[in-house]
Length: 395
Image (cartoon, rainbow, N blue to C red; front, side, top):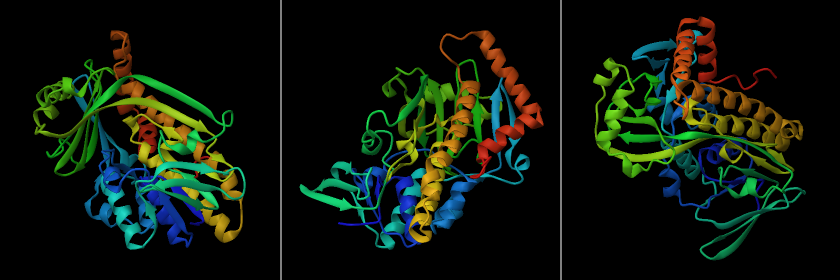
């Protein structure tokens, strides 16, 4: 088998990269170790920056988000049992974020790839990558017990934090930076109307952080901060709903509509960056290269900006015969990654209750939140980071 670009991983970053390359006439094959149903079964965030929505439109896969996405113009901050709104659109010349589930986005991209007749190999076991430091890289794997080899010009590692691509980089060629947070998020997905249908609610309380988000006008995603060693079995639906109400202002708490959870999980929080993101003809993108705590809703959006930089670089190489884009890919992507890491770290630090901290720290957080909502300059800084900094910011 031969192709121009072998993409490892059929998550949203790999699928979006494949679609953009296809639109430019560049042949690509996606290799995925899981089944398609397994990929669709992953429950992930779904707040899309304008840049990500625009990229879906560029790829010709925006019908779903245009028809079913819910536009958010503001965010709401809860602290000291009060709630304040920040006009994100007003502070960023009309920019917005859009609530659209990652599952739906992945399904749209899968459908577009199938319609175009592009090759995606699911259930590939024993995936390994070879010779990416030379001129003839290859990918080896097994399907139904049969050994396969895929020759290619480039390999795109879109296979996540635990994938084979970053793990295949020679020791000493990569530097990893990591911060692990001492708590987790207990998340509940339920088929109930969102308590705030046109804004994300972030809550800081002495009991810990809470977040009210949504997937659609009939499906909500809620979170509460919990100890890192808690188990899902420790949290009945009743306990979760009661705890969520206690962390919100009284008016919002009274408007929560409860229902049985259809998915419940506890996620640890970490910040992680691997540098560089290019190794010869291997490029890392998305979670293969970086992880952000979900507080800032940047994970999927960072993956999309990686894909934009990488697709442009590969198109420039294949069509325009220039290596400028691929030579600068890592530097450009990492500049945006670290800005998003900073924002996500700051928001996480501002809103969460850290073990071992006392009343002083809580008062400082509340004072900063007061400043944030009452200073236009501080509000604008939050808003412009929340909607997503431009792709060419400070270049």
